[in-house]
Length: 287
Image (cartoon, rainbow, N blue to C red; front, side):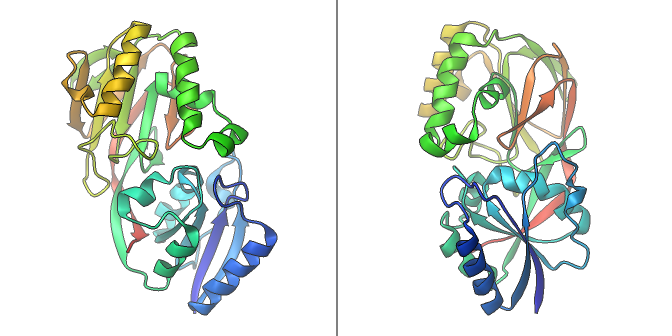
């Protein structure tokens, strides 16, 4: 019998997990030979040590990318493979790896246990599996809330982005990229191609590659952000003269300490901050 911990977000965007559905899920896992102990997610501000994975064979994550982000540190620490049951708003990592974005369909993969290693990024020692967003992007995430995401889905991001274009003061910051210093007002440090489920801000990135992709937007005018949004939608933003794109191992953020930062869709604080491609990886159950 496989020993597992099932971490779940009861308010997951598309498939909230009621007590009845949780019981049925545990029974289905048992049929696959997996005895799972259920644990509800905790606030991101709480240390991840609440999750003890000692003597655990598998970590099952029911929720979205934010749910995985909250437990990834312990999964790496205990070297426990992860099975995703995507129930969040966008489920970007599931899309990257070809995992069905319906939890019931993804459940069928758990019994097969085919594993694939993905690489991770780190920001001041904290892991991220998708991306870190600096400046404009961090401000957008700070304007969103759970009810908004639940009702509008990915539309919540676009509504918050439209508001940010009008309100965010666009303070500049500095990124030191492999020895070169550049100023910008928005940057995405990508470990994955997809951003927000549909868009390719760092289109050359891959979770299978041991490096990070930096996309830095240097414009300071509000109207320029409309061009950036259109460029991302059309896939042409990398051609812009004021967009810098690099593959890197190490990036340093400095400058205005009020600049907000998000990781994997969760607001995590402000600069300064150091980003690296981590030597650690994570094994994930895939098709």
